[in-house]
Length: 394
Image (cartoon, rainbow, N blue to C red; front, side, top):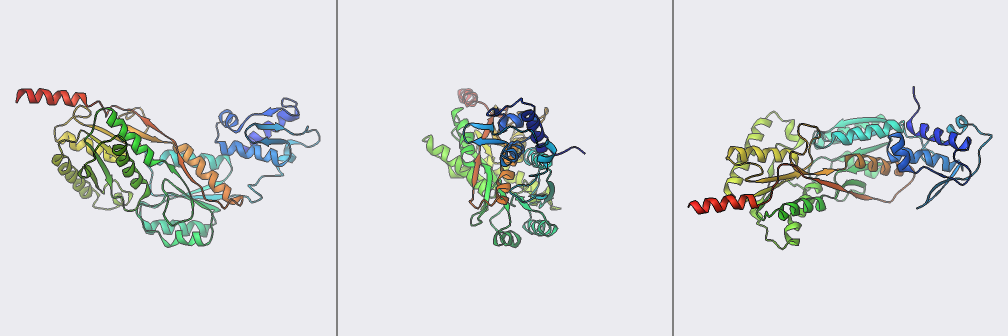
């Protein structure tokens, strides 16, 4: 059985110091350089460097790097590798990951990244899905803590109500980190995308293409910080561009895209109701030339409704959204915000591990994102030219 990746990095560096490749005072590779060389996260490479620093083999200088602190001749790599195999003196054996659900457009990459980092650090990972149900979230938290996990990473369910198990781990000061959203009144560190800025950028992208009548489609906000911030970003874009936003262009009643709805036997009827309501909404607002969808599935629904109404994307209407599946078949189909799921996984584990080191300060990290252009958006000039032709025939 191969040793954990951090041990491999540690041993490799130690051997290179011992054989003189990195002499006294020499700079050793950085966390980033080691992460790229060994195909691991920076958390993994950081642990290897931290172990060497704690054993006085190297000295870490903030802003400058890590340097060999003393020659090594009498102690073997095997001896040193056994001295410090723990985080902050406490061995971390198992982490629990609680997530509503995951799909190719969002969640799957995050889960894979968390698993890989834990594997590299020799930490066991337990995963449970809540399917967006608050009672299931409570059961997951209770069962995982009873089974002895050392800490939790939680993507909370949709809504503003908190389950009793979540409140209990707050009272017990149990180590946990929230991902994708924060919960008002819950003192916990969190990691997520800057959804306000991302939505603002996505909307401004459409405005630069000439669109001024833009619709916003989402499931119910219901106190969910992620969706609330996306709506605020949409509204902010109009304000910053000096445009008037028609509040009637906002629809937040989509239910079928919620994880909880997918578990219901009536999902098909819920989906059909959503499609009908979306059709009515679009029919009532023919002036809308572009849509911002808060999720990928909603973008698909908008596209289907427009097709039924005889409209083409992007010739008649543009669509942009958050998240998108990876793969050759669907690559760049919709212009979308790509969240940094790998970085999200790395930062969430980093925050959780800091809890084990006695860090009590709360951190709310808003990560960078990427706006990826697809084939679902185009400049308004195409639509304006069609209107001009139609007006000329009238």
